[in-house]
Image (cartoon, rainbow over all chains, first blue to last red; front, side, top):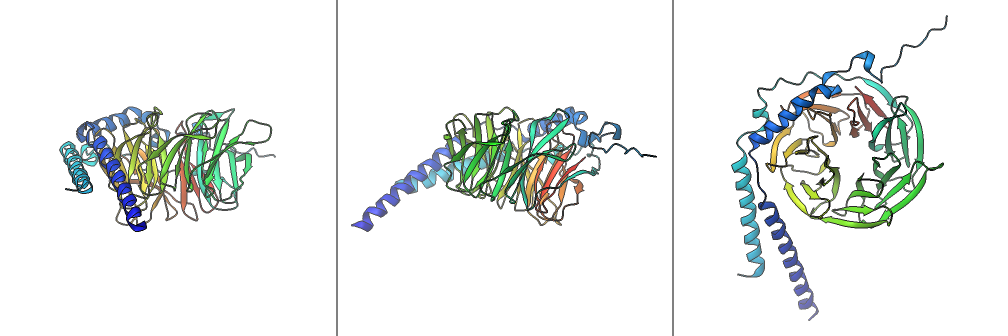
Length: 76
Length: 343
């Protein structure tokens, strides 16, 4: 009796899990997808537009680099 | 046909449908589309600061959002020496050292306001601290996950997102200490999360080798991205919010575009056979700084998929990387107990 009861519960858990999987797949299947060419064009456009504001890409002149150590003063 | 068999059949049918729809949208790859773009310059960055103070492996670091306040540039780091350290990256000075109840820390986060920081790890909890009281105080211990805390990110001073080894992510109300929403769908430990620029969505990476996009407010998983063949340890949004970049134990990074719902490029090299631990993008999205188990941080041209530089200098695994909001530098943290600031 015990074994039949727990295997019934296991089965209904499996069914519940399978229902959730199907439900999730339905959500993911239903989205609209744009063409990869359009997606890439937008990524490239973003990089292009923002390149000049990217210090690591453009390089930072020494005079404007807040991390560059200032020359130490020599005490004569 | 039994109910289980019916559902298995429907699931297989839906998977094929998704596969076909992705294929139909795949009219090019990013590397091909970007073939006409001028290559990114060779990027040669120097260590400007080495932050010394931790006594054990560093597991995480996070820049403050408004990091350039009062001529200081603030960030928080977490080490298994049992401390969070708040640093001013300009001077290299320690502003605060927060002792942790549990030294097995895996993540830390700075709130956008600069008022709070958070940490968590093998204690399964996310602890929130107030930096603005005369002595740093614990605000709340967020305790409900049944697995380790791998990542935390503040939405505000009242809400925080967490990712856990219990395979869930959660949105918490810091004031009540309760979970508002639990995000259920991964079948492996969640290892990382990143907030979308508009803060309405977040992306998670897990040991099931999947990245998932979630709606923060309705709690549902909207999209799932496959392709990796091992744990995803690091994840970040591309700054436009339309793509995400992942780093994995399979030694590759990948970019997935959200609107075409698929992988558009993979960042890999036959000679690279170390797992990716961490990643951060430069402000234009053109450069990806990826930390690896082989002690290096490789710099990738995100559009062309080519390696354009390397940050070498750590004597152990690079465990965390971060680029601050103004993009003026990149920070790497390592198991060698040091953080380095490069630009």
